[in-house]
Image (spheres, one colour):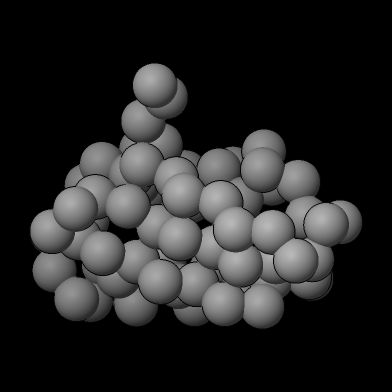
Length: 69
């Protein structure tokens, strides 16, 4: 298992958190997703087969922006 924290812009409420969580849970290998709009982060727990780029692409596909460090 691995844990990844992704910074996301545009989440402003719990509804946004739910949209992100539900979208990422559709990716095979994702075990757990916790979105936090107050911190602007999404924490994903997955098996080692899940690519970070696939997670970021899914977030952007539903209308949010991934912040790169």
